[in-house]
Length: 175
Image (cartoon, rainbow, N blue to C red):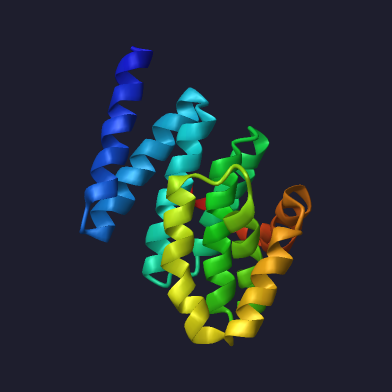
């Protein structure tokens, strides 16, 4: 039965990933998240939170930071560093939307130069770069990326959880 549930969750996530209908994708991620929470599968829980965060961000939904924080907390709690980096990238997008381009760029620099980055995080960084280039000068961009290289992952995670932590109450009520 456990294998059946994991297969269902995998299919739900795959379907959600390819959906063009954001509402349907959101519903699929919510179903996946509920099953993973029932199973206690932290990696699955992370993927549910991240999927919901990306949809919310795309729709300019105010819950996007909350979902990203839940994803960050979940990934970091199991020391899934590439996933932690992905959640940090999501929050950097939120910061960029909030007009905090320099800080967002520093976080992107942390991810860009972190040894645990993977293909997925590299692609996400590449997607964000044109937004950064349109927002801040080339010199400021390079300086902020270099500053990000020096940031400590543990410190950054704690700062982000502290800063956005109050947003998680919204999510807890909705689950």
